[in-house]
Length: 192
Image (cartoon, rainbow, N blue to C red; front, side):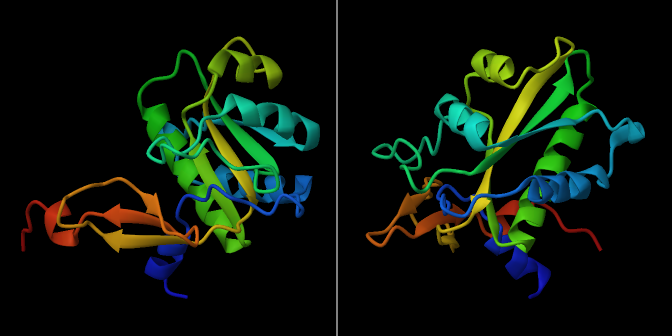
């Protein structure tokens, strides 16, 4: 598969095969991939919390899913993530650490896709309760939560509609569509 098609396949996933749980080795692989990403000043400030089993079940209700899908309150039982990765940063970190955070999250998403897993990068969660559950040290803050599992949701990138709406949506079969701006709209200047 060429890289563009691989990236298209690595869309956010919000429905998983709950009967096929991920393992500690799966999460170690994802963190190992993130560990080798570029880091500003090679500071490597992102820390990870691997969450499986009962703790994953307790973390799930603290997360908020797909705000654009007004009639959907998140994955139903049987389609919930079987694992999470918490990504934490030092409370005293500079803004470059947030670039590193994004690079790590995207790398995990791509690595997950390479194994047939789905990934949902979540910023909307009950931070205080999640930090207590995951026993985040006082000098760190939980910055992202990545929901993970074997993907069962079909996700498709489509051209932006004439209305210009960026809202993602699902069809009657549950296929998840994500409108994307055109290359021509995104590239504001070209210099030769």
